[in-house]
Amino acid sequence: MLGSYTFSKTLDDVSSFNITGSASQSTAGENDLAQNPFDLSAEHGRSLFDARHRFVISYEWDLPFFNHAQGWYARVLGGWQVNGITTFQTGTPFTVYDSAGVSAQGGAPEISGFPSDRPDLIGDPSRGTCASNGAHTGTAQRWFNPSAFQRLDATAPIGQFGNAGRNIVTGPGVQQWDFSALKNFRFTETKSLQFRTELFNIFNHANFGVPANDMNSPDVGQIQTSQPGRLVQFALKFLF
Image 1 (tube, rainbow, N blue to C red):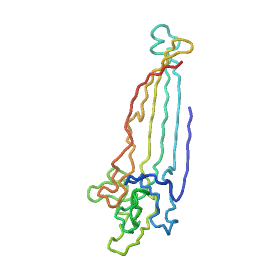
Image 2 (cartoon, one colour):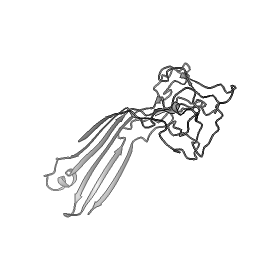
Image 3 (cartoon, rainbow, N blue to C red):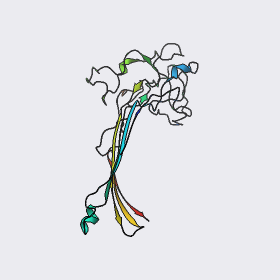
Image 4 (cartoon, rainbow, N blue to C red):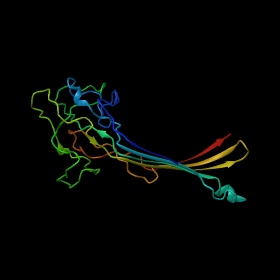
C-alpha cells in the first residue's frame, strides 16, 4: 500500500502556449495571450494546474483465500488479486472572461482561440444566491457568482481592460476511485492466462468540469460538463 499527500501552490504568467490551436474555444478558461500586452504583470496568478491539496492512495492485495484448496475450488476461487487507486484533489483555477471583445484587441483563433478580455471584479465570486432560482454558489446550477463581475462598457472608448485577475476562481475538485480484480490461471511454469476486471470511477461519482466562464454567455456560472462516469472493462492476457 502506498499513500501520498501533496500541499502545493504554483504561480505563473501563462500555463500553456497555443493550447487551443485553431479551435475557437478556451481550455479551462486559459488563454496564452495577455489581455493587455503592455501590462504583463496583470497576468500573474495561479497556474492552470494549481491544485492546493492532493491525496492519493494505491494498494495491491493477493487474496490468501482458497489458495490451498483442492480441485475446482482452487482454480475458481483461489489466486485472485485486487488493486486500486483512490484520488482526492481540490479544484484547479479558471479565468472568467468576456468574449464581447470591448478592448478591441481583435481575435486571433490561430494563436489563442478566444478573446482574452476580462471584466471588472466588484465582489466575491464564491458568495451569492441567484434570485431567480435560489441556487447557491458551489452547485452545478451556479458554481460561482457572475454578479461579482461587471462587464466593461461597450460604448466607452476602446482600450479598456478589466481589473479581474487571471485564474481567480476555483473549479470543482476530483474524487476518483479506480479498482481492478485479476486472476491468473497457470498452465505451465512459464505460461499463464490472466483474467482482468477493471472499474474506473467505480462509485460513479460526478466529477464536474469547469463551468461556463464567458460573461457573454447566458449560461455563465453553470456547469455543463463532467468527466466520464463509471467505466467497466474486461480483458484476457496471455503471459509467457
